[in-house]
Length: 298
Image (cartoon, rainbow, N blue to C red; front, side, top):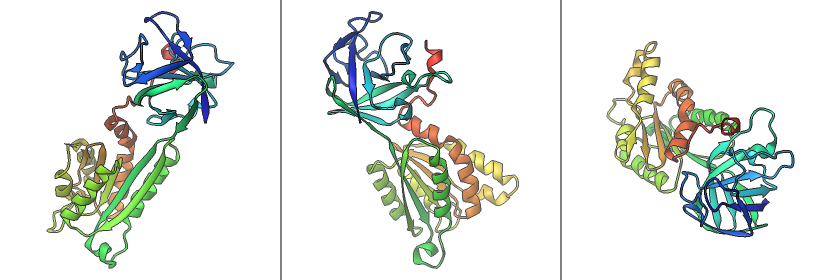
């Protein structure tokens, strides 16, 4: 927890900012501010730091100065809550190497408006990324076969998230190769706001392989290049890899990746999918995935 140390507004663009005791925040930013609605990210923040006198935004202007929150630990999609106001970090401005902590700036978009007053408590809420792993296998579902694909996906994801600022919640389940059951689980994931679903199994050409059909029944968009590249890359050495019908898709704001059932194939697919996973999370949340350093904006 921290607090709001200063609130700044500007009567016109290019003019000096004025410190105020309170401000109304709406979906366009600060009500009455010259920058209201002019930017994709409506509210800017910087932490107070006596060693940092320069603004990270290229001018002496930030909407909010905070105290007690380490903005260097704020990641994209994290939230800052001030009373009923909820801001979401949409761009992080990093200082040049060796720069002071106070040079970290955060551009936010407004998720919920309200009134912000001087000295209001401010809370940093790290993003919780929700992932569901679904194994499709008649034998694994009936207990005749040990599921190894699902645990391997989980292992690779946990390694990936260990070096990321997000918290992660991973749910796992096993289903028989039943198209309608999978469709229901995918619908539930989308409605529950799950960020990504990874399935393993059911991507071949056998009579019970129905995973791609279930996903396509819900998909708003597909991402064909990912799976095409993986099939070609690994199919050069293992021609059977070309027989997989794995797909990547988007349903609402939920990413869906269908992987083959073998552990070896899961290893190969995850090695490639991880490379673009973070970028895809940003894209479906309408986030600029390449924040600029502060030094380039001064």
